[in-house]
Image (cartoon, rainbow, N blue to C red; front, top):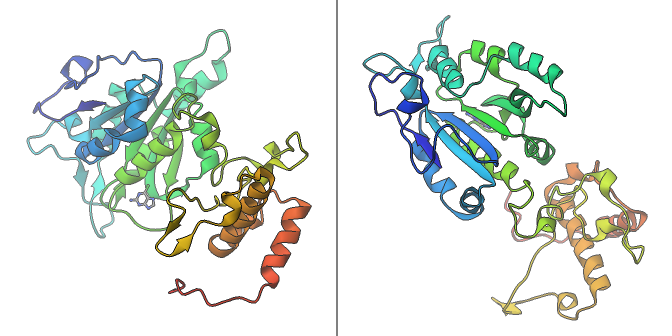
Length: 322
Ligand code: 6GU
């Protein structure tokens, strides 16, 4: 991970003045580049120095670069925010440091980059065409697995973390391809959201997960159209998620806290296991995310199962506090 810290009081925009941590500059890896512009680079260090994200960086599959917005200020107080025109609560991130941060990354305003998109060809690919700039804000469109899949095809993803009450709208209009939110709640800044976008995106890059199948067959995994049947004629949706939530998992010991692992998982009958898991997916989705059932790829068998589940007399779930 490369961290550009705001140590110099009056940095110029050259790469030479970047504080380098473990990376050459300019960036030279062939992996996907994540560029995060933030006033709190320290928030990310633990997150990106563990687990799959860490390994993907070590293996050169991704590169995560943190850019401290304060490095692009020129006043004594390193001011990144200001009061909103028209009055009101809170502070707004000023446009100039953000524009300078983007310029330092070679990011042009949208208008110029879109020209590059049009001129992009297979023989002469323009890097601008495989780059996106995203503003993380509670006002954004919702982030979801389908978008993570699209983003994972890019060469470079620039994430601007909003803070305070907002970001000057000119930055959004001039530079951002998309404004993105991670859910219907308010965070104090876009940093946690950016970390989530990096995590969800990078794990879909080929080679990042040891087992390529594991990203395909979990909750929200396969698009409806991709579901087909296996050699036995059992719909793959029997074990692919197909827009449903994942089934429950068990590992040793077979009994724990007085609860036994369902017998079917212990007897080695793979067809029975697939059917049980599919039923569990339907049950869990019905209980926790009934909205997903509308767009899920359901076989006739699934619909029969669902009917049966719905007809069961509903017992009171002791966990249902809400
Ligand atoms: Cl991306 N930012 C903030 N501040 N709040 C959020 C969010 C982002 N997504 C959901 N809530």
